[in-house]
Image (cartoon, rainbow, N blue to C red; front, top):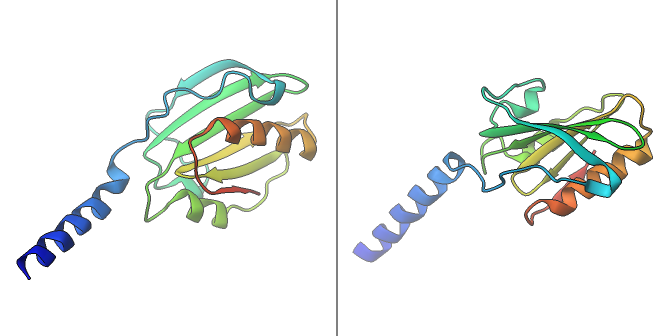
Amino acid sequence: MKRLWIVLLVAVVIEMSRGYFTPALQALPQAPAGWTRVTQTALDPIPHEWSETSHAVKAWRATYSGTSQMTLTLYAMPWSPGSAWDAIQRWRPVPGAMAFSKGRYFGVAVSQGADEAALKRFVQGVMATLPRGGETIR
């Protein structure tokens, strides 16, 4: 019986600490789907331009040149509450922007000069470089 309590306590501690450790991602992709990274910044403090990102633990922003200029903001999200899955479910479409989630990451690609197909191609290129996880594009 004592072992069961220890196992349960360890499980609770592990689950509660999951959102506190930032992921290992150090840089955004250099050249997703033919675009080339021009600038990159680790954002501190984390901007909460969208309510979906209020629980983010780390954020990066980069600009990319290619057929049209892209701006990518990527957020590392906790496991719960406020996970990347929660963020993508609450996302509401914005003209010239496409949101995605993969694993613990929630991202938004913005381009005023790109059509939806170009945004999707760029987002898929970014997602291919991220650590494994469930994927959603909106």
